[in-house]
Length: 272
Image (cartoon, rainbow, N blue to C red; front, side):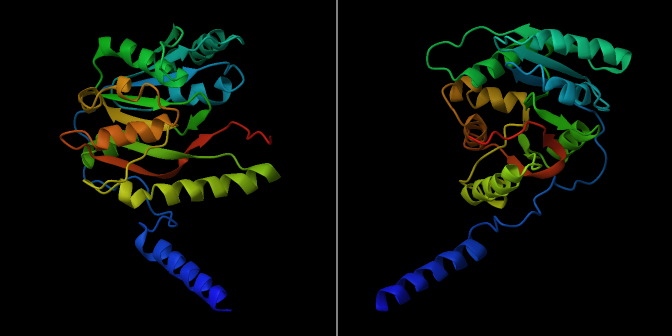
């Protein structure tokens, strides 16, 4: 009985700590920072989309990215990462079908990763290198399965500029349609927020750092000065690694991570 009482007490203390002292990770109030006043000079942005065998996903996501109603200079770079399903062809067709309303799209053929590089990070790095010719103020790293509403980019840039953030990242709304998805997805989000409490991530100077790979808007200069994508070249969890690198750079970067319903993943979750 004594052992049971001790264990029960320890469990109660642990839950009390999580609920009161762990960055309120269980709350869902971390949305884009509210800023005052409009952005006067809209910075330039280049989106980088690494894509391998994404021909089925692109019709559900790429038109929305190409159709962003962003007031500034914006273009999309899709890195075809050795796809075998015609991903590049599908991307170009979707751009042509959208006509004059579509933002510029460049599809580049990715090369095999050098030794020590994770495949996705290498694809991102190739897109970043291609974007350097335009010297954009921001890079938007996103995935081929991510669909966004028309005003998403405008809201991201407004938050980054108005709240002086070097990185603004939003965790995409994950698909939860099947019974399996409805079981797994909430648990994943809860566990991620417990590991990386968003409030702590968003606290300038704090040690906790993370990001969500489906939607990461990053200032180009702080990214370069922190070590660039080469600094996380072997990372398998690239988003957390990139958030950590930027926040812990010198001078320290200001990062932000939160939830949204404007960015959503359309990829079904495999039950394996």
